[in-house]
Image 1: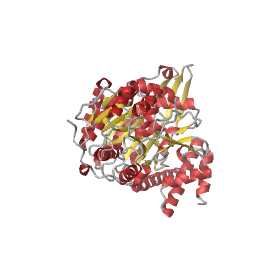
Image 2: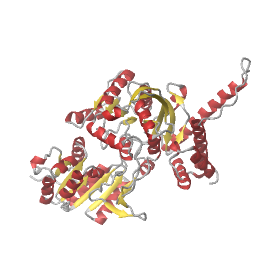
Image 3: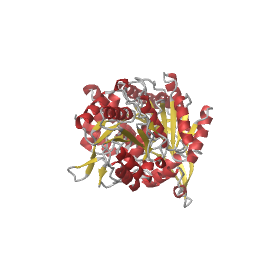
Length: 577
């Protein structure tokens, strides 16, 4: 028996961006429509409302949803069932057709890639809407892209969804529209865009604070040489990669110190009104994930849930964690995209993955707002490339074909293979041996601006930032961070004055020591932030927009990774605005 049609009047009210996008969709009535919306904005609800409209008016007879993972198949089917659309999440390629009491099925990109002819026959049998969730996955490989194109060309409607920056490679994504720009390059064009900054303004997502931790790292190269470097200082890419990897070593002191800080922040949020707030540690591989879980148990006395692979047991563990009040979840890649655990509010980015796509997917797990005032805190290594991504979180990125690609951060190709296999790369492991690492809070990044000066782990200065109230609006976050930074600087000046006033009885005064490059950058960053804050109070413009305007006028990366010369130029520029 055919399933009953969904009742439109039972749908939850749509948000403003969803209504606007739906009106645009129904007005156009085109075969293909691409909607880009930040994680947590409600892409699933939007897509299901479109499906319901088309089922009710007879435009389609069936719905097929294509999702990245097995876990998301279940999540899609449950969300659809709540609004009266029955989707078969257990459909297998061998089944050939869905049972008659379903409106359609949910499949994965891998399923389609393995047997596109099966899904083409299903699509041709009934007038079908295909919802391609996180459409950038259709560009993961030639077989997936070709499979999606071959399977769903006969569909009467195709709705493409994504919540993260598009791909950084040249694989064209099926059914996405590309337009040639003035520079001759092809760029993807979305029909509806709802970015993080829009959602933050509307209160749809949480403000995210990035707490960047630096520290001293030591390692031994494969040639037997011992090297030391401060995480976050300007270095070659190889040295950055090795210092980064050393910091993430579970046997060092950096990870235990950062995990203690993250758990302290989680306690603050729980005591401030988010009683069920949870934390997520994103690891690079299985071995580290297990080690981090042991560290968390030592810090908190409570076992963490560990999710290592995309299997049936993993989905059940995620669902159990989402419905519980357990403090910590440790995952390799299962929770990097699409998985909905709204209570996640603290994250530890303990992976060396550095592409904009992966970073945005990971941070998207923490931004889903449930009620006004909730904030999220993500702890990251103080690595220039990551700091740049944190500063540009609100940036909208199109998929560009033919643009020369710069290698970012770590060896991304190697990392992508490691993430796919969920095993540490033996080749990378042999390059060096981690010896030790210590952690200190380097800076806090919010709304494109950085706040604070270096604070050792476990000190009252660090606690001032970890103890920020958990329920704040975006404006309140900016004001409090500015005040914390001012208090920190005032305390440093008082200490310096006391030291200067003490009689130098025992030893002659030491000659003034010139500032190091690192100290100069910190001082210039503080000066720039103070000038930006002053302009914010004069004009009402958000800090992030002022920083963005300075970057447009002066060029260069975000202030968290800008050079001394670039910071000096921006200071001179903002003083003339």
